[in-house]
Amino acid sequence: MNSSSDFLGRLARGLLRVLLGVAATIFLLSLLVASLVVVLAMSLWSLITGRKPAPVVMFQQFRQAQQRYASGVFRGAAGGDVVDVQATEVREGQAPAQPTAQGGPITRLDR
Image (tube, rainbow, N blue to C red; front, side, top):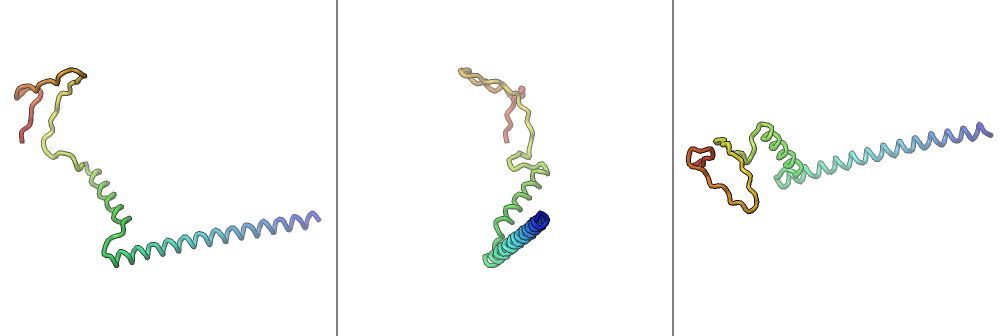
């Protein structure tokens, strides 16, 4: 009786493995079909409206920002002169220091 129960146990485990494998395959195939349907629907919608899909636009903006920052050009950076300034500490209750005369350590640029 022991050998027959072992055989039935192995058979049940084998059938369960096959059943779970088939279920996983069906799930993955249905996920693939659903994603293809969504891509086709977005493509048709973009053709009808004449606009690019939002994910495409978003990734293009990311790529442009990456290229701009990789080249060292930042949007807010000034392209002109670089001016070194001398830092001073300002404490509460203390009046701010007056700017020095033209040609001193702190100069003002007039454009």
